[in-house]
Length: 573
Ligand code: GLU
Figure 1 (tube, rainbow, N blue to C red):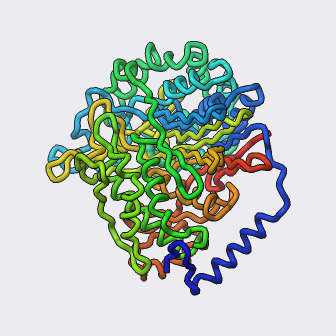
Figure 2: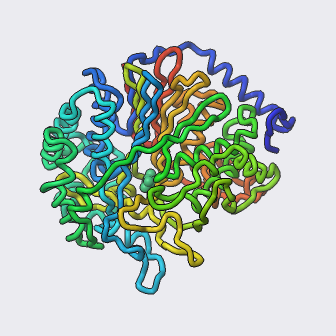
């Protein structure tokens, strides 16, 4: 049933052939007039416009990303912002340098390992722990952006906040998605500052089209623009953050100004591995995203995906099984590398991945996969139970006029984060990405809570290069731990199935996080539900709200794509 290299079973031959004819035909249609100078794809048109404006003024990819992030803090406040963290990959065209910046939030020094446990040692419910002070991590976004700007910025830092300050002062229109998300975030009303900002005086979610101004955020941005990121990490902004967490109406906690002042972003060694004729680069831990996407692709290299049609049952089965194996390893081995040994080389070792690949059967699902034993493994950490929240987070991709690229995924975790709002921005609830149960079978788990530790993420900013080392694409997505599936499938769409960026993003989603195989509701892929069940999959059909934003480099210019499941747009010149 599965297509190993060099074999096409006749039963699938016809659909494979039909797809290839379709793909060839699609490839032969008129060459579109694509932007050639620069491009940005982000989750909100105002953010993409800000990034493009900065590039029109001579800004580089990092400058555009900073301007877009500032605007996202304002117009997509539920997803990301300066009160959160993220991961940024940067490619420098001049010499091929790839830098990885880790701006993940950290736990405060005073955090206790049992923060998410009841007095009798059971895990507390997610909804009881995910709002208020306790889940707030020390925000990493601004110091990470400042570090990237020092190394790769072209325009002065203070100019990058102009578009966001202008919009915050003069107002922006509440989008359908923001309106809908306010309506869904029930507990938002329990936080007075957020309630006053996001609801009408009569308590209704702000309507679509409402002109929303945020003078507090404009003032915050003016300070950050003139005094640098440091204005956020010391002085009265830091004091207000600490006070909001300590005096939270729910789950008050103990972030101090010292925690905030001592936050450090990290530059880490990028994870780059070959995949067929390409090289894929991802972000190393503290996110699990880079390792997991590279593992899934490495496991799939033994199968001829190019001749396995997208959306076919064999593609869903195969990618699901590879994903199970990667998630089993993720659960056991991946956490903050400053605290535990993560056997990165072993997990991505070619021979190890081939041995994992052999566990995939054509005729039945393996069910729940067990973690493997990678070659360089030194210490065993046990599987954990961390939670992933409902759709928030944001991804933006940029390529500037020099061919430099950014792939940045940015998050305040769950929609509207902790609900605590300070000086016009929301604080994250990222610490809920830690394992709630710190120990299992007498051993500390990889992703256990610890002071100053980074909770494990799934964010997967990705860069793809061709066989000559030329940039081929930049992409990524929000979606909690489903990010890994969204990104991997899009990479396969681009590389194995030869799709353009938008078509790869549009492909119906299917994900497997070492449990149920999830099929995207309302798409053609759901026809496989029964057949997959026959193969032993537990199948769930559900809404899968990715937010993929990517740019592909073609000989004709930049081919941008923005996820129709959200509100973004790719803009270029
Ligand atoms: N907190 C999640 C992570 O770091 C992202 C949440 C989301 O994408 O909704 O992986």
